[in-house]
Image 1 (cartoon, rainbow, N blue to C red):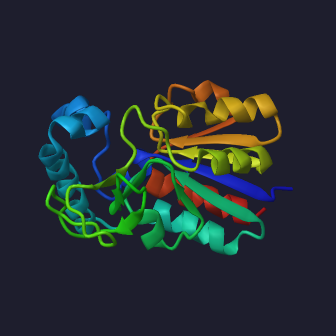
Image 2: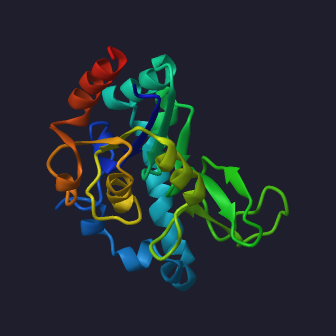
Length: 233
């Protein structure tokens, strides 16, 4: 009997809401140089350029809404008698807006900023610049997007590892399977051999063969049907 579910989500679950993906031919990395806007080195070279990139993405949150897949996962959390944890690689806030409460943002959040000196994190809806001041210290030039860049360690990895060790159902939704460490989660689950594993994706990911079950199609269609099946037992 399933008691603990861990769900990894990636860009594919938000694509049906109109959020740009990263690795598609017309995705974000086809339009922007990763080294310039998503690395600590790029931020050190030109913080204004990095702020401009993330300001645009933050503004874009206002024009998108959670889709049926986000809402289905919120329903699963609300109605499932056991534990449900969503671990998302996405930096949007669509899971929360759909109603999910038990969410780990392993790559950070667009709607938050971080004091690079103290590590303090603050909600942030406006544009961010080198002149923006820390809400606590009042110091300018210390705030950065609360987003994990290439070369940085994802957030809350100990909590994620503990949840994976304890779960008996692991689902990966809308992920490419080539961004680590998240891409390695299914291999860990297979090694442990204690959980059923499911890939729900538009098309097979790089690690598709590692999953015990595969479901392919648009997340807004496949995820609600999968949740219905789980809740029926």
